[in-house]
Image (cartoon, rainbow, N blue to C red; front, side, top):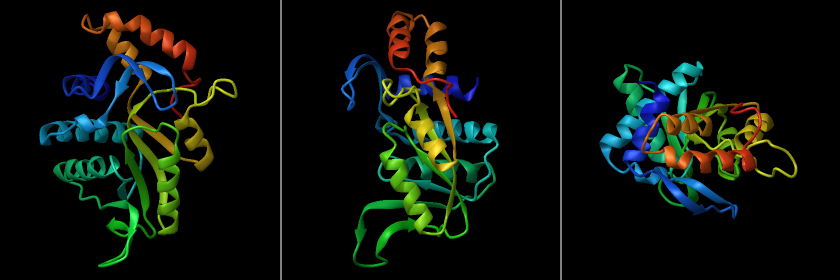
Length: 220
């Protein structure tokens, strides 16, 4: 089973991926909602990390360190580092704090040093791109070089269709010269729904949403 299918089935089983009518922060009404916080057990995180690693390896991304933006990126990056250790590669891991610590070691960074390293950013999704841009600035300030961003799900959704059909992921990739590696995309979800009797009832709503809000060209 490919990593896209494994991930989507895991997300449904964990209720991280739900279907219905959900109001997003953008104000749009979406027929599906993804919440990586529902991967809330060791087994779920381990399986998820395996899906991430397979997607990253398939994309041929070379990196020296994994970085998890606070907050959801922290357990994802940690789980991914553990998965690579299981596969025989010991990968350094780091993450940032939302607020700088004034005592102890201080600062906003925790974990392995970034200086001179190729950094893979690991997060759940890219919505507006604000959190990712903050992480990239933090990495650059610490002397690291971000080379790619791995996300669980690329919604392939245009930020502002009135201006362009570019998605948040595409905007971040183009603006920073990075690859964005999704474990799965909306296109994968549509294909998965088409093969699942359980999800077939949601296929028309997903198609309609993509026609209205979908980005052009897929993931960069």
